[in-house]
Image (cartoon, rainbow, N blue to C red; front, top):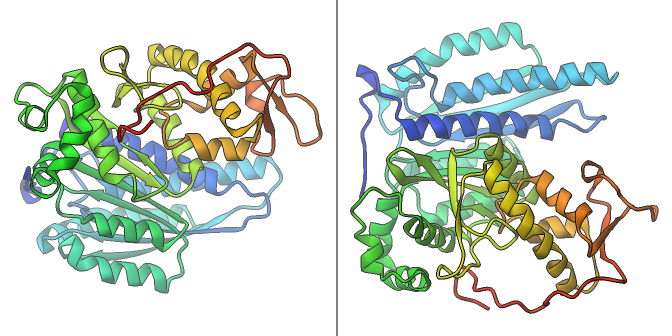
Length: 419
């Protein structure tokens, strides 16, 4: 088990992978708020944010930790939303947010309170449309989770986001992740762990899983588990990603098993769980806006873990070069998917079917749909879309009557060896 105790009282250092993770968390949370406050008739948005391993809120360098990031982005997003609404002639939105900050050490929680106090006071004065209810806890997360769950349920919060930034792996049970995701249709989790600790855990509890997942890559479980060099080998990354996906794919409909990319290699995983394809869609786009922050090894089209390591599979850093390769794969993958359904798919149904297995950017998916010689995008009134940015979930993607031949039954091995 990999574990690290931060000396918050002395000023904890901000590690490179933590800084990268916080940038993604900050930008995603801003997008989360702005996307959820777009309904013209809306006057209020309610949510609960649970930071299960909150820390003291400030690092030695002065950079904010996740609790302060959440408070800052709530203010920034609400101001942006209401400026846009005012420009559209719409009334403002109010946000009511329950913030629960938990750390296992009471002295760390007390330090967090002192760091949050001036931020909360300023928010109250400068952002009157933001109503924050902050609760502090000091408990091991698993021991405190029932009380957290009850607070969220009693407040009838349907929109819930958990940040579970544990040091190792075993501080959060898989059953707890499942419970969180099933408690409300609008739950999401950011789940961080060190890959070595997951491998150690699986070696003890499910060695057969390790063997099954790494065998297609020409590795044995022992080879994979005992990898001792810098964790930068691409095949190793592909094996790790398959194991992570297999371990957590049953926890939620949409699971992003991407590693945090940092100079020491791929040692830390930031996994995003969501119940709705829209959350994964936004998350993918945020990763592309932060290219090289997270890494994927495999395909970049619709079947990201369906590849033969002897023939294909590539490193994807959500950058411009990777996006070019993704578009090439998408031009073949999307018609094949539609053909597998018959000859038409509703765009909303199409999104539901693809977003658990693609790292692709929304713009690249839409561009491939428009540019494909095999497809046409039909509007609800029967017209045809000509521009990628006009595609909506009410549209239909349809195979053209005259189309070039492509194989319908290409054998691609999935992450579990399925065909």
